[in-house]
Length: 155
Image 1 (cartoon, rainbow, N blue to C red):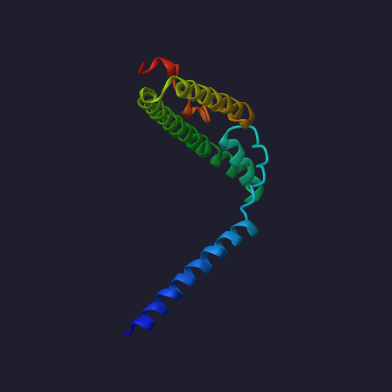
Image 2 (spheres, rainbow, N blue to C red):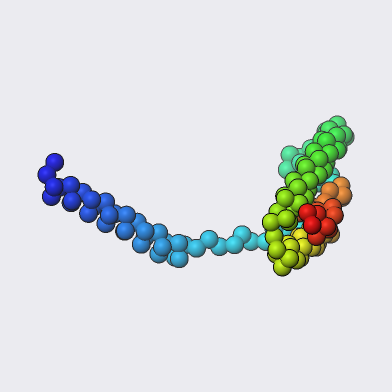
């Protein structure tokens, strides 16, 4: 391969890369991701009640089917709630461990900012729990909140 063709190949590759970068920039601006529309509020009641209501309508269940399916759904609801609570507890413990490990590495101002962030996350979790219609008492979003004040660990 002679040097001219090697230089031509390098030039073509560089031009292709540059064209892709320009197209990517303009494409990202022209087709920017739009935020997802807000979800409709969740129906109240337990998961099994919501599923049974939907299935009764969607699958045209008769009363005998409803009476046989209902206990199955309630059992699954209990099992899923237990899994959810276990997972939430594990997540919360992981966040608490992370906060304890990070705190010694922060200066006083950063610790204060972390404490504010944790309080904000606690408020958001509480708001989500109040607005979610959840009846199983699982703390949605509480995984960010440590059990103890973050300022007390690692000082």
